Image 1 (tube, helix red, strand yellow):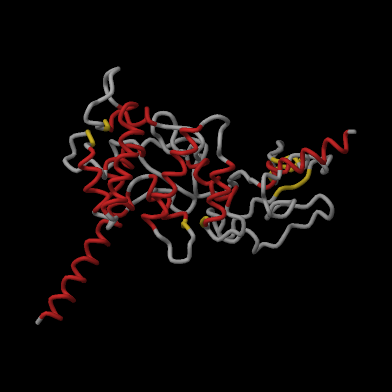
Image 2 (cartoon, rainbow, N blue to C red):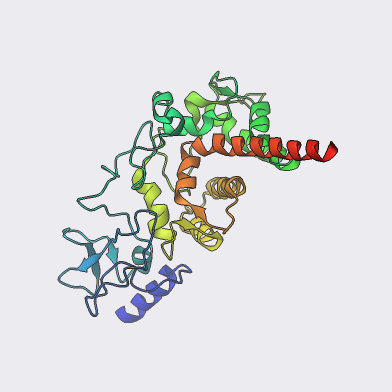
Length: 312
């Protein structure tokens, strides 16, 4: 009876995962040998960083981080094994990953967050979620009008139909939660000072409820869903992420998260189909928005110069 229940639990807990029964970088309880060191290459943390687990006294049931007294995965529940936690070691460059950061978005590779364009100093008085939205506030008054969102998206080179669609969805989703009164804003504006009130579920939870950035949750996007350790997510892994992060009956959260990842993919548009960790980090703090706008502006200027040369 117990055996059949365990088998049933294992079958449903797999949740569509196609990875090995013991996660990469873990010790298998059968032979106590670590798996291939190349299997977690570039897992969003570091090429050489292995989250090796050693079994406890009863290795059939628990996996523990090396040198730690607690379990973080149970073999009877494969979802806890396949979706690995980010477990920093003593020499980790990312200090206190479980502590949310108010104004920077650090990772293991970028413990200081974004440093280009004097970003850290210029945005030191803004939460990371506000930084994410500030790109769309073109007149810097703390209020984002639909027209500002439209123009900001067009600066990335998006088509008019796509831009109109995205603008409508963004302002319908965010306006009421951020407006100062009880009644909806007739102009569908978004107030940055209350942007944290538009937070939703069924996503990575890398923003906390006050708009701070959670390094631990961001790292776990990759430790849980980057199957082969390439340092990013491909389309199949993105779908696994969307499925794995869903909360029951959270229809708004499901749709909002899917929409956000679609926009992120369209913005970055990776040639190899893999959304890289650093690019995604730039989305969370908004720094990549300016980079993409500058890239599109340069392309337009180059195209115009080529047309002018052909004309003359």
